[in-house]
Length: 270
Length: 269
Image (cartoon, rainbow over all chains, first blue to last red; front, side, top):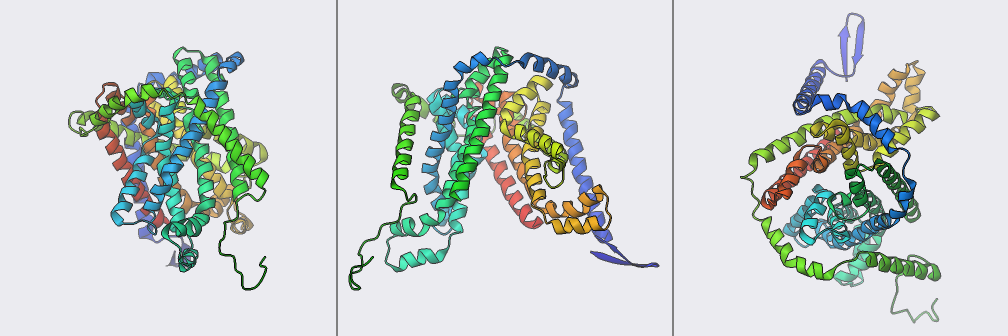
């Protein structure tokens, strides 16, 4: 805040002149970066195709309606598979995330180096998308649902463990001390001192991640890891656009349903 | 509870989470049945897995040591393309999110605008980036432009939703005070609402930049350009050592971005 003395008396402005200049300079740099990036992208773009996009979109839309409803009979099984991939993947991830979270939380970790390793596990699991995990796993264990389940699990460890270790770091120490004062062993401290405090967070995290995983498992099939993505991929490759639109509607319905379920469950828990 | 004041109970059991035992057992039973059914559909071919284990170890061994050298030029190209794509997708996505976010705030927009903006947000949130990218590639051709469009649309779903929720949760007294000075609608938005939501929105913009970089690795798999395309090529050519190098670089950049965004968010707030 700055007040300037002018001939008409004091005048209030939000920033001083140098602050204002610094802000403008910052904006200038930001705009320059964006324009430069856009130039590089546009150099790598065939603009003819981009300008053509409107007619292409109209053409595609006319091919996609009406959805081929009879294809639904073949879709029940993939939808069921997709939900199973998400659920089993989330369960597997939670089983692995709990120990990682306890090793990563600064108040429960046995040693600093162990904490660093656990944090590295969390970051690498979070930075690689489930689709890339699936790509690798399909190469290693072959196509199918198992690759999808493991890909979802590997991807979710980081997310669940990160939120869980933050919850562990925020617990109330007094309760743990009270349990310790009764002469509890380490394991008893964990189950009666720490676990009850993080239980609500744990339940919330698992439902939240399950919801995200439903969304992610719909596309795993694109690289051969099972679920409805397989049908999507084959319908797109065979240019069966009426099937594609039906699949998109099914994905929309599944995701909305899972969001509704997770909101209800979280509401009930918290 | 106690029969006499001297006899204390010597053991204690934690009370169960769900009081009603019938409901508790029904839930356990249901979960067990579901698990059995779900595992049944997994159709794990154990022979195939057993066969795959030595092959798998060979595959994993092929990832080591990561080979940064052989494909270094194309890796650098891919990474740079991803970074450009991320930057402009984030900027364009946020620029588009502002009108949608304002429109999707219940205390700001009239009912029809609210419903329209909410449904746009819901649709863009539902479909994963990859599906958006497939359609962007169909419409705009292969290359980073398609990835840019896909990531921008995905950003709207994320950013506009959070912006709208932040506006709905703002302090109405400040907005009223500005309105009482006779401000126009734009002045009202600029002086009453923008300062209230700005700190959190800057943090979220950096967070979204981080997400967009991660996702840019995926849109390449369906033809959207960037490091994902390089990664897919490495997998298709069975050059797993190069693929390992790319993955390590992605992890490193994401780590740097995460720490940077953490610092920036602390600095802003």
